[in-house]
Image (cartoon, rainbow, N blue to C red; front, side, top):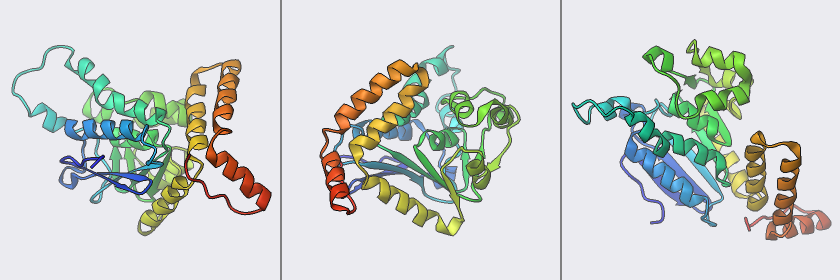
Length: 268
């Protein structure tokens, strides 16, 4: 199989959809190093796999993800780690996963129920779309544990919701529901718990049938534009337009417009 499951993470491809399912319900799907490495590998692989047109990240059990499994990591050895172990480790773990999710041109959908805390919250933030149950709980646990945010929290949140609300989440540790997260512009949609599966299925299906080249390049423009002046961004737009207009989906889109019918994109 191209995408292998590992303990704690199910991986399966269904047609154009790659589904990654957190599967440690007994630990509220807290992510350990094995799961992190597999997620990084699968998302990187999917980014160059022309058979994958959308990635779905969801979870087994009542909760999405309680964050990084710090207890399991600290229990591996009774010896105190060398100074700088966190600084050396993070670039290859959570701090690699979040930029990869932002930069890959394959759209990513996170499906959240129950708790999304710490890294679980940030996976939802880094996804292109997050559909959550109305009663889901988003929480930044760092101040309650006495340490500072990781995996891009202090970079992602201000860009989405501004500094005032970011301080409420990071400094005061305010918990918010799926409905509030939608109202604040953090996630795409909140739906009643019993409608979450259908809402996620509809969104994933829509993305899997979209013009994949144009969609991926547009995602790249949105992400890269954060750090560019307008002139450089317009150059990138011109390059993206050149590439997308040479795709088979562009020709199909124009033919559908001419024939007054719905386009049937193949992702090429």
